[in-house]
Image 1 (tube, rainbow, N blue to C red):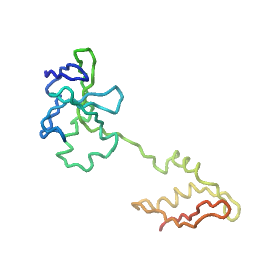
Image 2 (spheres, rainbow, N blue to C red):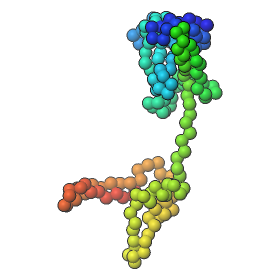
Image 3 (spheres, helix red, strand yellow):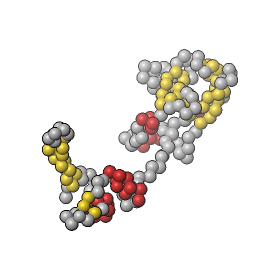
Image 4 (tube, rainbow, N blue to C red):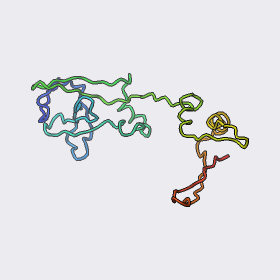
Amino acid sequence: MLKIHTTRFGDIEIENSRVIHFPEGLLGFPEQKDYILFEHKPGSPFLWLQSATVPELAFVVTDPFLIKQDFLDHLTNDEKELFIDKKGNKLTKSVTSKNGNSYEVIEREETTVLKTVDNPSRLSARRKAIAWVYKKTDAEGNSVNVVNKLYDEIAPKYKERKGGYTRIYKLGPRRGDSSPMAILELVD
């Protein structure tokens, strides 16, 4: 166990394995190499990076994944290992200072959030589209289901296309209220 004196959190006992070591220190603080991470408040996106040797040195930090979900995508495998927990679970440990305050100490890790993307053939996606598409009639006055035509006839043509489905022609302002007008065309 390591005893750390801090000006913000009082005296804290922490396991040596919880210390984060920066071999070259932090920018502007090259001589301070050992830090610990504390949760600011339960549910807060902010953390405290507290120096293990200088009581008054602490930084407010946040989880980079809250700002940029694909934070690890551009890192090398060696750099990614610094952030990845083998089990993928968030590791926290509760520590108590001498003044009786309890804090969560957090290790770096990557968590994967599964996000379901609705397939256009599903009913809920069609209902969302119906809310935005106006009703149309053909030359004989019969009602045309534009959403079914869009999903059943048009969408399969663009399934393999990576993007660039439409072309927009600006027509200028509409007479009367000067609303901007454009023609939206599906690209073949």
